[in-house]
Length: 457
Image (cartoon, rainbow, N blue to C red; front, side, top):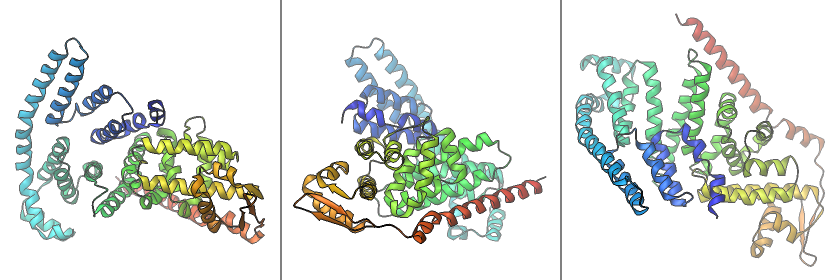
């Protein structure tokens, strides 16, 4: 793949404004592996990202690499700038352990008492009150957990930060800070996620559960300006990609999450590039989510002037224009985009997407043609010549029509079948119950928020 092609489909620059700095580092490390940009540019980007963190050792390491590149290129003043940056980082390196020890000493007793209590096995309001009275815990002492968690996160101690935030959210009565702590909890969970671990599925589901809790909490903040809520939803849908697009099974859940009215509203206004991931998730889990395809097509048409990429164009060419040749070209470009997308690069996601896309193309092509040249069809579906016959047999078996391969004439003959009027009605109304439930839920939530607002002093 050429460097230009990689850059063309890279979304890092639009994703980064909605990501925590520590998450952005992961995105840049991915770009380094792909070698899509000059090493010096990525190095300076990493330095800019970690500048406001307290990861002094990493800062020194990156400054040394930057100096070596600058010195090699004969950049004037490189040595002086490096020495100045190194001095500043060493000063920070000397103070960080002391600060961490101070915050740790303040938070550790409370965390140890909590872990030794019955609350560690499950929260009970009566036991919680007894715990606070027994250890004379007030909101100020609870706040030390939040301060410690933020500092631990800032130096890359995500596990310590997560542990403190979980306890803090149980103990605190400060709703606003508890809300912020939930953001921190999700960030730490994301940065601790190891997709290869045996417990990965459990961790992914925990993140997804927390994402949905945070979405509900964001929706219920009726006193917060609507614009602020909109931005928070945009951040949340971007963060959710780390969990939802980790496996094909979790991608299936992303469709329902992203197409909720308030979430998709944030996507359309703040981050229309999320359409790429919605389309990918629908196709990856096509059997479960094909009912949402019409809604996705409407979104693509609405955002046509604001965002386009191979994924939106593939759907447009195939399902709106019925241009199979153009759809084939866009599918080839989608394959290239998979390679350079941090969230979609997993082989399992790519294979599921391509299989579903080919199945859909095959089905539509056969609905509009009765006798099809197999070579032409193989080209349209981007099939390997050696495996064409096997692939076509598999596609015919799963298709809702009869088809036979005439090997002598190299043709696929499709038997025309017209669906009954009853089947047409069923197909048209298939998603009606789900949509009605969505509207009912939205009305109930709105009424509940109005009642809550009326009860507030």
